[in-house]
Image (cartoon, rainbow, N blue to C red):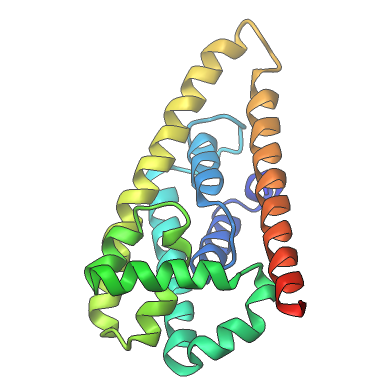
Length: 204
């Protein structure tokens, strides 16, 4: 992910944001924070700006959210249960999102976009419940804009601090990159274990 973002910039950010909002468990906490750090000068790409990072991330998440909303609207729960494992989506993820949406209604989309884990899957039950596409889009944009602004802003601030540290410790930037890579690896390993455990329980 680090190499993808560093090499392809906004295109990589857009694709990762679409995937995350389309229920592929890509940690936006890592994606947006690292993109913000690139905008802050962690790596001298000279191509990213903080406002553009926030805008691209928000637009990508809106597109991915409508994909998931459309899947929920047309295919329903059965489609997700049948094919969800191919994108590391478990039945437990869907149940958690459905409970959240049933408790909070349409406003659950707005608040859900501000919460880790829930934000990735909340579009599916919104589609299943046939939530208005206009209302869904507005709430998704507001929530995503706030979330992405905070994470990208944190990354931007971190980059500026790391630049100061790097004046004395030239490998400081590599420490940040290594931490991001380890976080992604640990996250994906956890998701794979959850999917495997669910498949074993269904087989039993």
